[in-house]
Image: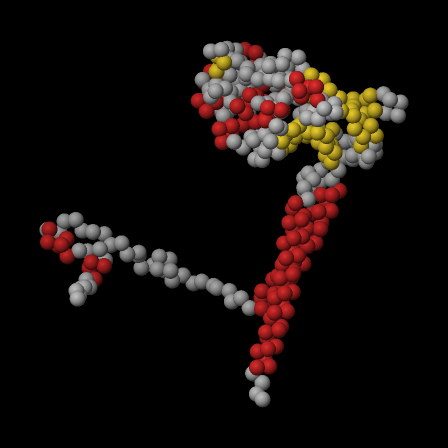
Length: 370
């Protein structure tokens, strides 16, 4: 049986062999410093969970969460929303011929019309969204396929884009502006809305195309090289993305503040979605100054210039009209979550109260002498 000897110096990291070598190579101690923090002697508080503290907490959480959830759910339900699927997947759909025959190589746009009826008027500002399904903007290679320096107006990045943009980095020997898969797949359907009055006359609904992008994106992250004065010269010797029909300096030539890299439709698309089914803001229908509803109830027609094929990836396209509230768009999940958590807490509080009362009574009766 071997006996082990204890040496305090060895515990501190000083080995007996170290002193035999002329004092050279002293090993530093690995013991923590003798401080309250490193020796875990700081004052601490540990709650003692008793029925008198736990049960009220469950009831308070339930009584607070349930009314908040009801308020959020009612507010969400008061938001009006109307959705139209214009993919054209079914043979009876208005856009079926466009969906069947149109591709990225098509040179002539396809037009289709979708009539619909609003049963209730839409008050206040109305937001028009386009929605896509089964489109994975969150794919890793897709998300990385961009050059933020180029989008910020850097001239060197404009002529020599990042390699992350491959295979949409160059075209015909010229750098692509904007480069990358995100920009190349820009949503380019054109949506127009018309109201049909009682006389059968079509009245165009004014759609506001500015103010749809985040302020930080518009004024900080996206800039045109050399300013907004002459974009044709600024983007000289560059090529348009492969799937685009016109160059970036021709996205909105009538408005220099909405052209090039600072085009708001382009900026909105470049903010990638986290889920494969998403919606992005397309236009705003501003509230009328009078008491007339923004969109009165009645018949409408959605005119679509079908430029964006989705059959290749089994996707779907939608147009959504929606109002908003102080909590944003229509989303009942948050209200349901609050109601669910509050109800569970309240139910657990009742169950634990019954159990506590039952066992507490049993213990008291057991202490009574016979």
